[in-house]
Length: 149
Image (cartoon, rainbow, N blue to C red; front, side, top):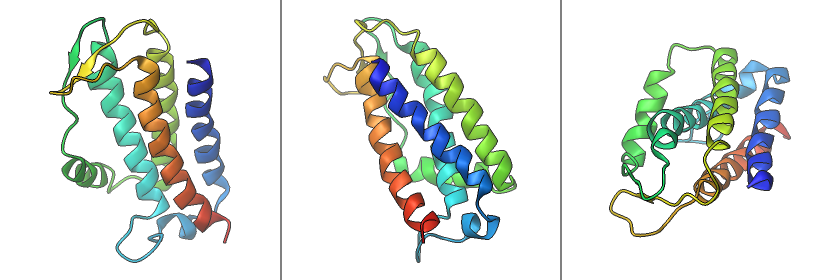
């Protein structure tokens, strides 16, 4: 679990570095019909917020956590939620929420197993975070393509 949490925490460093990037680069869509880096960070923040508030508190042995919301609808909601926020405030919100999420999920005992929604698959806190780590990697690749050009 420590290795997975460390990798999950590394996303913090990558997002913190965005504070040094020209804001114009952060607010431009990464390609046609795609989000901007600002919106990607907001999207990551909003999922962390969901997991922190709705999922981690319910992670006890034998629990059935709620089904994840419809991804497309939730992603639209995340963009609306953050529409009036500055790039810096979104980055700060992400950093604060990710730290809190890491802190809270690290308190979940490693042998605890739970299901999500109607699924039969048993999750641990580690396998749960792995899902979102893969999500981070996908979006960090998108961000890095833009930043490194």
